[in-house]
Length: 82
Image (cartoon, rainbow, N blue to C red):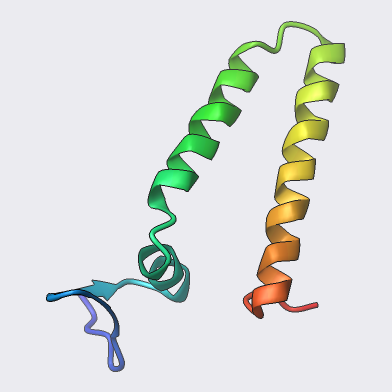
């Protein structure tokens, strides 16, 4: 395993955690894991309901809207290039 020359660390109270990437650092720093898990489970639940093309289009539109909003937040925070 290649050792990272400049590892990223997140300090929470007395605990120090090494982040594997910049995205991992942001997720750990802002404690986004629970929100990501809820979003993931919601999308999986919606995808399980797809039985025809009309439902697929509705679910795809909803997922696209969520991803667009997440990208907008990333742009505002400076994580995504404009």
